[in-house]
Length: 313
Image (cartoon, rainbow, N blue to C red; front, top):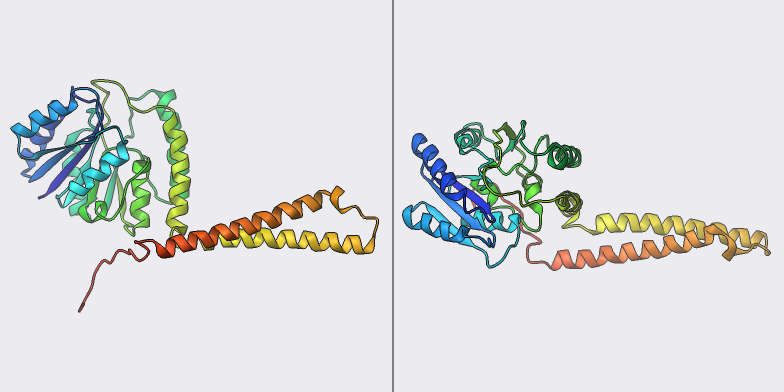
């Protein structure tokens, strides 16, 4: 199979028939073998009824329904598990992503050798205040922290090699950071393509301001897990040791000061409380590192590393 199109959705009953018809038209014009995987993230409208009708009429359309709303990341992860195409395309169900971009995205994966290609909505039709300005700030911070030169991390229109989506797990709100997850999994050739962004035709957006706060918290989490997930002692042990040593030096200073001047009031000095806090903090960080190491070394996937090739094995 050439292409799997994974579409997470929540309350998009009006747009689904038009979107699937559009995708079919693009696929047929280019002679691609394909499947469309519609993942209903606990919709409360008639989205699942529409999906059932589409599945009964077209064999290449598949549907997955969640019992309740789990979020876009869970929907994408389930769609990735079901995908069988050599190239996996993701897009939103609101018709703001154009299926006409699919051949160009596939070409970058198959012919240009990219592991992953992310869409860039260079010209947007969203509210400037509500989305554009916060989105630019969010992307700038993510680009700087992850060292991945993308302009639009949160674009729903992306293309992947099948191996990429089978090697990563998307959870929580991590759909914004799939390029970061792919990079940490060892897929370094990540490209970008300017794509068309269309005005919303049906319904309303499902995301609010809280997504930006959650986004930055998730970025901090994924950067930490990516670097120290299998070696937590390298982080907690380093800072714990530094904190404990500084506290120890302050303690030595206070002891010497007391020995020189017996009238020296230790408990009235700010240095006394600083030393106490640093010693306690250093001990707690060190213990956190040991606990993290115990968890990491006893986890089922402690040696779950990606092997690219083997010879004579």
